[in-house]
Image (tube, rainbow, N blue to C red):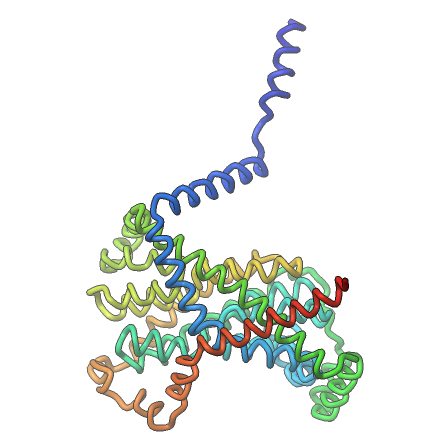
Length: 425
C-alpha cells in the first residue's frame, strides 16, 4: 500500500496536473509554432500580405494619425486638456462617470480614429488626471473610426453610396455613446472622486475664468521648455505608430494565411448558421470573417457580395464597431504599457458592434435608396468636392510616403543623439 502511494506521489511530481495558466502557456506556444509553420509553408502569401499591410501603414495610417498625436501631446503639455476638463466636467461626470478631461479624449478619438482613444486615456492616467478605473472605462468607448474613413472609404469607395456615410457615422457614434452609458457601471462600488463643491461652482460660477486659471496652473507645473516638449511629443507619437504598423502587418499576414488554409471557409460555415437564423444571405458569412481581423478588408468584402444592401450595411456597421482583432491588439498593447486592463475595451467592442448594427437597421429606413443608386445620383459627395473639405485630404494622403520617410529619419537621428549622450566615449 505504501509502495503504491509512493508511486502515485512520484507520478504526480513527474507529470504535474494541468491548470489554466499551463494550458494558456501550451496554447500560446502551439499557436506561435503553427503560425511560424504556416509562414514557411506559404512564403509568397506572407510576403505579399506584409507588403500590403506596410503600404497601408506607410501611405495612409502614419501620415494621417501623426499630426493628431503630436498636437494632442502638446495640448496636454500646455494645460489645454485641463481647460477642456473643467468645461466638460458637468457633462462627462454625470453621464459617463469620468472626469471632464474625458471630453478631450472623446473628441480626439472621434476625429483622429483608432487607437487614439486608448492612447490618450493611458496618457492622462500616467499624468494622474484619471484613476485606473476611469481610464479603463474611458478607453472602452472613445475609440472610433474617423469620419474620413467612414464617408470617403466605406460609403463612397466600397459601397458607391455617399449618403450611406451618414448611416455608418451615426450608427457608429451613437453605438459608442451607448457603450459609454453601460460602462459607467463598470466597478460601480468604487468611490466617485468628483468634488461636489467644484461641480456646483462650474454650474453657477465663472466657468471660463476657472478653466483658464487651472490651465495656467497646469502649465506652470510642467517646467519643460517648448522645444523639449515638442521633441517628446514627436518621439512618443512615432513610437506608438511604429507599434500600430507592426500590428497592421501582422494581422494582414494572419488574415491571408487563414484564407490560404481554408480557415475563412470553416469559420464562415459556422457563422452561416447564425445568419440562417436571422435570414441573412449565406454568402455574407464568408465575407464577414476577414472583417473580424481587419475592418478595411472586411468592409470591402461585404460590399462586393451580391446581397440586399440593408444586410451589407448592418454587417459593416457591426465590424466597424467590433473594430477587428488588429485594432484590438493595438489597444491592448497601449493599455498594457500603462498597466491598464483591456477587458472593458473587449466587452465594449461586442456591445458597440451590436448597438451599431441595430442603429444602422433603423437609420437605413430613413435613406431613400432610389436616390442613391450611384455616386453621381445625389449631391452629398458633390458638396464635399465643391467645398474642398473631404477631398482636400487627397493630396495630403498622396504625399503620405514622403511624410512618413521624413519623420522616421528625424526620429532615428534624435534617438541616435540621445544614445550618444547617454554613452559618451
